[in-house]
Length: 475
Image (cartoon, rainbow, N blue to C red; front, side):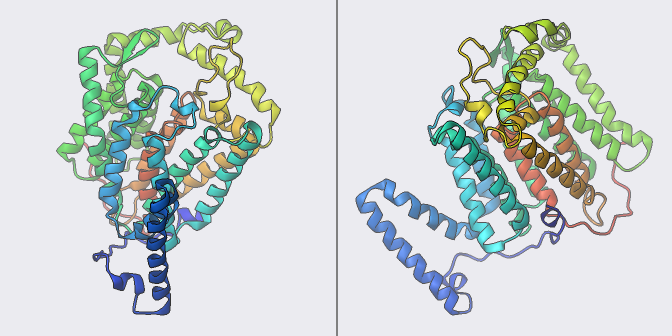
């Protein structure tokens, strides 16, 4: 894994010329001529397929898209794709996660995979990580098929997680076009509309009804997914404010996304935001006074959350959790007790296949006992989910990958001539790890895509000479 996470040239800037015959044939060599001939045959095959059925043309269209991927404007394409995914997250039919239906989210996942294939064929960067990770996802999906039978529902989770890996590969193979500066600004702009909608829902007492509590969810399917998305953007905005010379827009966006996180009243999202702010405060270079800025920001967020009636109510309710209720029945008195009960029902599933697990997505597609109110519900714990779905072996691989990722991010701290990108990367990973302890961090596709974009952009920065100039601080 270190081979992909460490060697990457500093943002090579290439001038993209319009699509032309010369780009396909190079200097007129025979290889280019063969590629051109293949393209002509593909177009002819496409025409023949269209005369029979539109479904017959789908494979040829996919191949054609892979061929032209290197010539599309990646920044605009990914910005529009992510924006479409975010704005339509709440439009999917209820229970679509547990079905084999192909909706817009599935189409976007497939599209990202095709983009990654096209760029990997041209650049071939990161193959030492992409190939084993893809093999792992395919293997665990094959185990799911063996456990639950072959169906679109069974392979759905494998395709979704493969699309997250594909997006990271796209960023890593973008030749510096998707730089960290561009990616952070892009995701900020994508998150503005959902965040403003979340604040509007807070003001008008609308949004999602979760166990009798009205919580803002913006354009997302669940307030918890919205909370983690907004928390990441708040941490990104704080980092940009520190590292980019106190930009006003970044300060305003940090306040907007922090307020949107609070409006969701998600304790897991709030915990992730606090963890990220404290990591930024701890790792930030400079005096103790500057380091305390992150802790002060975390204290402000906690104070604002407790100042709201529902925030104080949620803290009071969760602190009254009755463990006996969580252990004996699914009708738990709090969300924490519900989680404890749900986790208890997953342990017997893991015991059926403790080494390799029951296959990717097994905890989501399993029907369970009809009397169990948690049957068919997402696990709310990513570590336990991977333990059940991929076994001890898979969870061990995941933990080893996280360790390697944090080491690679630490190597990118305080580089000469660039912002402290490693600090942001470590904060994002720690926030995701905290959130994953009691929520569905990666099961929320938008969160996974956001992390893939940001961490991929950070990993394109090559470890180099440490900078000597002090970081601009909040003061």
